[in-house]
Image (tube, rainbow, N blue to C red):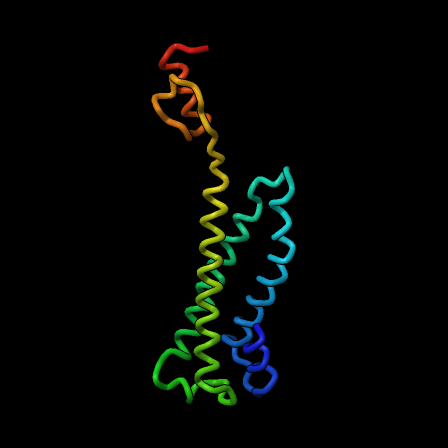
Length: 145
């Protein structure tokens, strides 16, 4: 966010790719500063999963924008011309890191919402960690309850 802000501050060029990177990074920081505290609540049931999906797609787009412009050999000729090629590639690398973190948080939210419960009954067929529906099916088939 800081490098992109300096691109916007020091260069008269304010193309949609640079502004898009800045807007997405600011929104991500703003949303996730509050979203960090949601899972601490007992009533939280994964409401941030759709937001995580949305931000994953936004970061994919940001990575594509930065890769299209700054990855090639003509990096020094691309706008903003006041920034060095190493700074442009640094923004591209941090964009990829943000994409990776967004993807991993989305996967974590999806796997945490499965809510696996331990089964200690002997008629569970040797399954120690199964879902509640599996336990109900097992009870019916064995004839329990």
